[in-house]
Image (cartoon, rainbow, N blue to C red; front, side, top):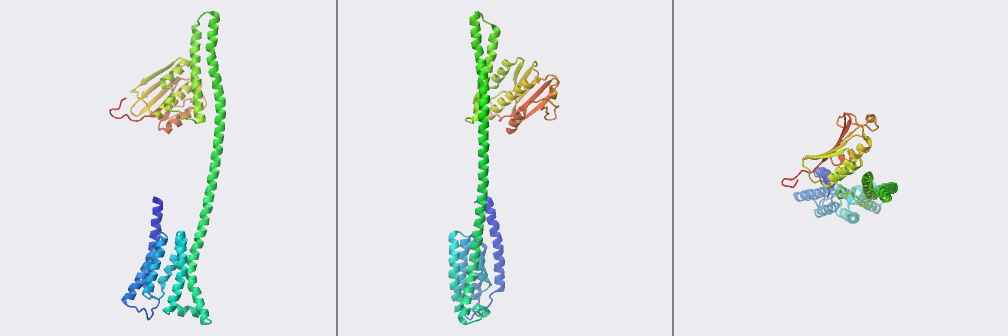
Length: 426
């Protein structure tokens, strides 16, 4: 049983227990409405009356938490009442409460037993009250008048209705509650169906978008790869025709080889991300030195350094470090001064890896669209992709700070690292 359900059960038992306590106190205080010659008010009679009343109070206390137990206690109370030849009293009103509650809250089996109890109890009650010449048999018939037979039939109908109506009322409330719950479940099912349909539509739209992006980007990258690799064959053909080796042509071939390799790897990443066939793991990414080497091959003036005690990174930190460095270098290439230098510094500390990328800024770049500031720094131009860097770092507890310093733009990315255990290799 879950904690919320336990609390609800405890609250229900407490409320019904207080009600049973009040009921038992009033019944014992009021005592019997009358006594018969067969049941004189001696100590044994009083003890039987108290036992019957307390058993019925206990049945009321557990009527919603344990309807079956409540019905059994009501029968025990009735048997004690009959064995002591007690007359009908206010305590018997508790039977009506038990019949209602067992029909309302009991299991299907308890519901049927409660209905059977109402019928059998009515027959027993009628015979018993007539046998002891109860005050009820002398008072109620006068209200109907007519012949003795008419009065007897009216009494029988009255006793039967007194026990049947609470059970029928409990059954009615039970049925209405079940119908309400069915409507609520149907409404919830409809909401879930609509949500599932929306998710399916979003997934279909995402799939279509991924397919379009894959086709467009994949085609463009494939063309770049083909054109970059074709330069090597053009150079080989030109050298074969001229019979001489051109150093400038060899340098151009190295650049185009880098372009082809970068495009080929980008195409593989696009396919993995869009098709969601395999995760982009750290093992699928080149290291940062290779990334810096590619950028240096495409743009002179790129310098890299490492400070602190470098150590292997976990998969999450490795992916984040590569993607963050990739975007920061891309931002520097796109928005920095094409003739200026770019430096990337990786600083390892006990708690984090800090990647600092600094690039020169061309005149007028400070007013570029998307200029922002972080941690109170002066406004600095940022590429649109830096917002994605912030989100990626925030997801792992890191942060990005950018600032404009003189003629340069500095981006500092902090990536939290797992602490190094004592004795573990660095």
